[in-house]
Length: 293
Image (tube, rainbow, N blue to C red; front, top):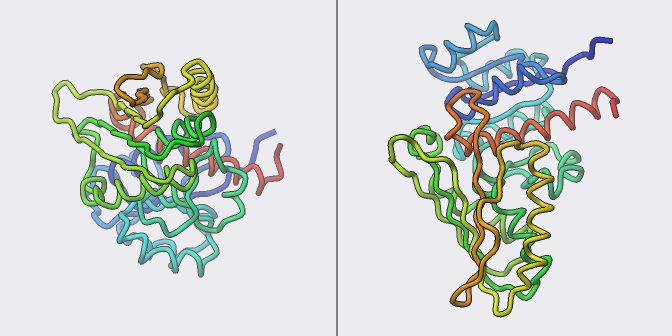
């Protein structure tokens, strides 16, 4: 029996929005009702039109003019853009998945709070670095709740960072550190992002540091590997590439994210981790709405 799909709207036609579109159209539960931006000549709009998707250059006004075009809205504009869009989408009673670091909605990391997030009208996907490192930070705190400081460094290919990402760097680092503190309960956290201009482009790497006096390496490694396995269920390219090691009073571990190559090549793991997480949320919402198991 053919399943009725839930329609989504995507606002923002840059790297994140364009990659989301490919993932939505591949989904068995979702389909894109509107792909909206501001520039009618953008590559994202051209690509969407070629895929047979309805497009608009009126941004959120496309949804205001036709509220029935979607039930779910992915906002892939900017933190400032979502400040404007959020109250409008709330009035239209849309389930909003905020891809920007605006911190307006409830922060969501699927492995940590997917079920609770579905009760909210607006959820925030934190950041790509937040999706990659927060579950690891929580795993560290589970074994060593006495930990007072965690630092993460996300290194991504410069070519994978679009205008929206570059314009939101300050919000990105702040939201990521806030997300780590919120979910892991560590008192102090710091997030750093590096846009690496290397050519050929590098894969996304996330290094997690924690100040621990006497780490239980075996327990930490086992807990982190459990987390990695769960995340791989919705982000296939998520890998532990450095088991926890301890030196000079500091624990270090590293995660690599290889992209699926949907919109940008596989080096853009930063797009994949936040977009795969967002799709996992949208599909869970769709299952609830369609009354599927």
